[in-house]
Image: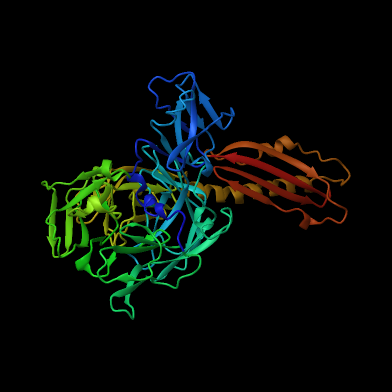
Length: 604
């Protein structure tokens, strides 16, 4: 089954290093875009048109502003603004003199593309891990693009790289999403990953274009099982000179999977049978996962493949970018070259790479390797290998995306914590490194001597004031470490053992003293009907005082219990909310048949 959007299968893969041509604009769905009139001296009779083709001729259709979604400003040289972009706004636009009927829209035109965001999932080197990328259906014009990642709808981090910083494993209950800075309200639909095996993985999309490809509404969730490996299988037919091609995957194919075929890197219907001497290369894709190119016989055709299509490397390290190729025996090209590409327009964006002190080339048999030493951020790009006249014959196969990242220390939950909390330190990168990296952690420039192999995570549980300081990290075998970042640990207000003893003593002495004093007073009263003659203020003065304690309030209340009350109905209550303590001491008097409540509050 051919996908209607299969032409874009490669475009999102290299979003962050791509642009669009000068006459093309790619804007985010739901955002606003300004199209500027190309006329050098716009006249009052200038109008905007969309352009369609009929019988190989341009046919302009005038656009009318509605004052809301579409506005045309004469004060700004007839700039047209389209708000709340929709798929239907994808078109070719031109600004032309309405009176010039003969040359209307014969000059410059603008191709407007409308993109939406999607989190794409790619198999990683580990058998049970995958990587995520914030992808767009066309390379966005706005630059630079800052990507924001969310986990379970909560903000995680932002970065210039569209790749999620870590490899993830199967967590069906965990969802991921992304957005562009400034367009946080236009998030990509959430995705979750489950059923990770060495052959397959299943992705559940909350909604979006991945679901619409299954002939269902975009707003409905869907699940797609992807293979970890896609390859073209060449099989002989009964006729000796013909071969049958099949797109094989590492897990059973389902109706939800969209298979796309390419011949010489151009969209093609599924091939029925191919001559053994065919000069064409073939490849297939399941959704966004592309197979290698194959030839029926290498001696008859060109093909170029890469060992790894995505490489995440640390700043200051070295990297090998490897390609494998074939060229016809009758055209053994000596010219083999690597190109660095930062734009979607190949002719304008490719830059021939030349050998320098830190860049080297070497080839063995039908493989060619580009080595870059002492990597820096400017080396982040797409790298394409070409042989002979390949550049002039066919579109280049998508190359290798290299992301160069530095190391950064991140504290969770915060860089300011209180003693006793759990703190997790992460040695962060802009793209997912392999899991077998060994890390070294430093506190105040001194390496931490941990008992076990150190990973990208350092957990302090519980954190104490001794853990405060400047932290940094680095990967073993590399000299460059991350910048230092300070962890501040605030002390908790603790009671000294002496203060605790005093409080315990007071809780015993005060109630006992008051109880004995009140009992002596009560027994001296002759008549149970006579009102109490003791002075409540005198009770307060009898409270024991300690120099280290400051009394804040005290009171005595007389409470009449129910007729059936007994001593058991009066209970003592003491509350301790340090550094302020409050205490209720309640006594029952048989003479007065009453409960006396003594309340005192004191603080250190």
